[in-house]
Length: 166
Ligand SMILES: [Zn+2]
Ligand SMILES: [Zn+2]
Image 1 (cartoon, helix red, strand yellow):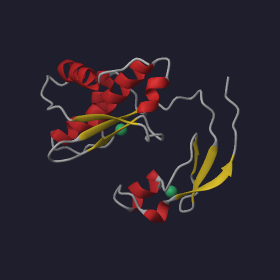
Image 2 (cartoon, helix red, strand yellow):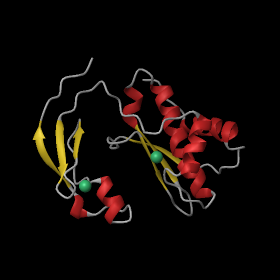
Image 3 (cartoon, protein in one colour):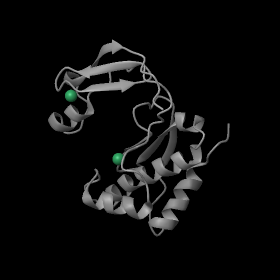
Image 4 (cartoon, helix red, strand yellow):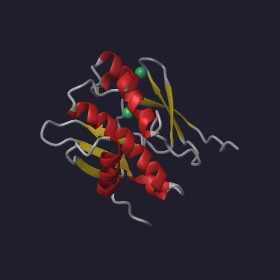
């Protein structure tokens, strides 16, 4: 397996698109991150950007890692600028400038195995691995200020094997 140096990729983005102003955050791989390719965890002392380890198994790993890290750096940059750091209009502008995706890409070639449902909003979520205590992101955003809330824990709707498309 090729190793990708997150610090190097961060530094490239920082110099190319942020005038090198961003202090280096904690950059780490997360092998448990399955529902998105990356995440940004704000912290006044040192923010954290996590990249899902499963990206390393993809044939276009480097591209996916660059794209995901670019996306998360925009969240981080907004936070550092003391601006709202969600997917705001400024976020989208910067995203276009960097040429990264709106959504964190989850590889599509592995079949989904489980269907979970949020009992609160009835949204169904297809996943490849079992979720443990994961909550509905939409409901947490809407009703719990974006924080994890156990009222919105996802429950298994059914086990299913969806054939791969194409
Ligand atoms: Zn995002
Ligand atoms: Zn929900």
